[in-house]
Length: 168
Image 1 (cartoon, rainbow, N blue to C red):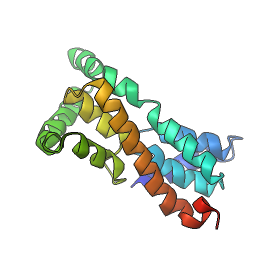
Image 2: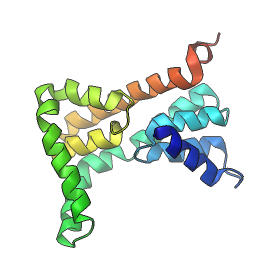
Image 3: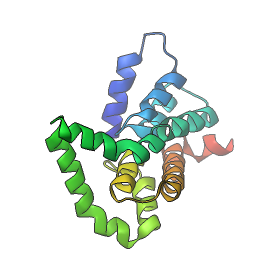
C-alpha cells in the first residue's frame, strides 16, 4: 500500500523541476507514506543514502510534536463544528480498541508499534495514540522519535541494501 502511495506521489511531482530530495522529504511528511515511502522515493531518484536517511527521518518527524500536542484540540474543534465527525470518532474508537495492547506494554508497545513499518503503523498513528492515550509529551516524543528512527533503518536496509549503507 505504501508503495502505491509513493508511486502516486512520485508521479505527481515528476517532470516538474522538483528534485528527488525534495520529493522524498515532502512524502515523508505525509501520513501513510512517511519515511517508508520516502526512502522508496529517494532510492528511485538515486538520492545518496545518507542524505535520503536524514531527509526522510526529518520529514517524518516534523509533524509529530504538533500531533502529540494539538490533535485532541483539533479533533474537539472539528467535532464541535461537525467536520469529519464520523472519521474522528472512528479513529478514537480504533485507539480505544487498541488501548489495552499499547498500555499493557507501555513505552515498548508504542515503540514497537511505530518502529515496525507495516500499513497502519508509524509515527503519525503512534503520535495519535500517544495523544489520545494521554501519554505525557516529554515521554511520548522520544518514543516516537526512536520508533521513526528504527523504521527508517529498516526501510533503509530494504530499499538501499546493506552494501549501499556500509559502502561495499
